[in-house]
Amino acid sequence: MNRRALPWSVEVLASIDSTSSELMRQARLGHTAPKILLSLDQTQGRGRRGNQWSSKPGDSLTFSMGLMLKPVNWLGLSPCIGIDLARTLDPHQRLGLQLKWPNDVWVLKDGENHKLAGILIETINPSLPSSETTPQARYCVIGVGINLNTPHLSLACASMPPIGLWALGSTLSCQDIVIELAHRLLPSLKRFESEGFAPFKPVFDGLDALIHQSIHLSDGSTGLCLGTNNLGELMFLNGQDTRTINSLEVSVRPLATKT
Image 1 (tube, one colour):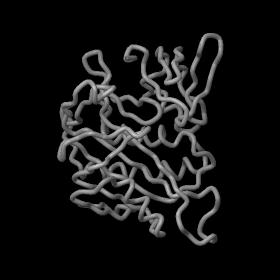
Image 2 (tube, helix red, strand yellow):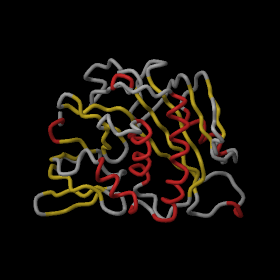
Image 3 (cartoon, rainbow, N blue to C red):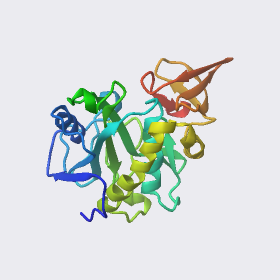
Image 4 (cartoon, rainbow, N blue to C red):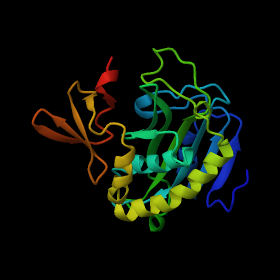
């Protein structure tokens, strides 16, 4: 891999249970320098809420990125990273990519939303001397899964129809994606650490797949999505009441996809 002075160490494996799990295992042993771990095959790749990332080897790009972070507020980190992922996958902004709060990249094709990519963020307190960490500083693992070829999944396996990047006409290689995302992310994460989600909100608003859409929440309530606030929380109009929800509380789908 041409690392183009990549400010992360890179390790590529043939197969592993989960790249995110492995980075967290390494962090518990004190290895917390910025690192990218890729695997040609993940046997236990996962998404949010315990969902499995299903794909045949070669059909998707799965990797994880780990580093120490100490943000003022962790809220909004996933939407912030989603911006860089969308820009990496569509550098000329020709594919019509959108972000589904808090952690998916969608494509509207033939009048239907399709899932292209997803993000899973996990953090731990690593085993470091007290002089090297604070209660706010945590080791952050950013798991990324991208469909390259369109997976053929039964309706029972996918709540959102998947689509592959190459099916959209993209010519990006796996190397292109990893290198570009790595270079984009570091300055974004540094800014997020000091300023939070607020400076990223205008860009996210322009990519928001749910804003002004009728949606339902996992608690059964329905209403109108009002977009995000400056913390990166979702704003939701339920009757006359406006609620703010964070990524730990609910999953969200457009009303039309409710099953």
